[in-house]
Structures are given as C-alpha cells and as structure tokens.
Image (cartoon, rainbow, N blue to C red; front, side, top):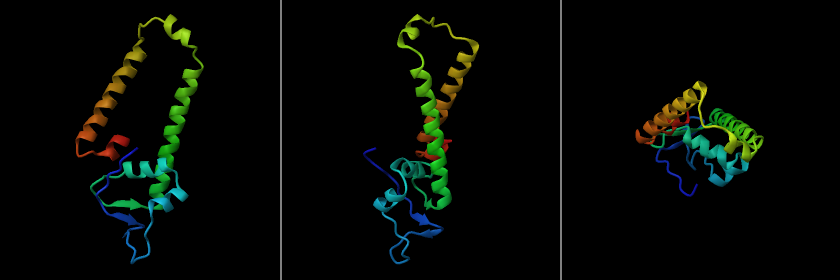
Length: 128
C-alpha cells in the first residue's frame, strides 16, 4: 500500500483525538502495538468520510478479521500445495454442479464488492 486516504476525524474511546486531551496516537505508536495489516483493516472496516473510532473493540474486530483472512488464504495455499502441477493438466475441464454453483456465488460476491466500492468507496460493506 503506497497511499492512504481518510477524511473523517479520529475518535479514541468516544472522544475526538487531540493533543489538548492528551489522547493523541501517532501511526508509529499504533504500529508498536498492532501490525500494519491490523491497522489497514481497522481503517477499511470504517467509512473513509466519517469519524473513525479507534477503540479496543474495533482493534479486536480488525484482529479477528485478519485471523479469518490468514486462515482462509493459508488453507487455500495448503490445498494448492498438495496438488501436483501435472495433475492440473491431466484433469478434464468439465465442471460439476457444485463447481458451477461456486463460480456463480463467486461472481455474485464480486459484483457486490464492486457495487460497494462504486458507492462512495464503501469499504465496510465490501469487507463483509
């Protein structure tokens, strides 16, 4: 990620972040406590043009989402690693009913994500 865009105020535990309230957190400080992926997910799970809540619950939600994504992609990598490359070439390309359904579900999900991102870059909906 080379660019980051957020235009809303950052709220920490319900209060607008400010130096005068002494609830100011820099990105560097946040990275000492959380991974870059967790912070990215935290921002993606909230609208870019509205106040953003930075709280323990929101960070926990981001950690949970990160864990779910890591588990999913780890499972996919594991399954692909177990299938030798030559087996792909030898397998016929006739899909079963389940594969057609999976393809249809995937296309529907892709369309929903695209629609959410076209709707004022609605990343919270896209992340669902």
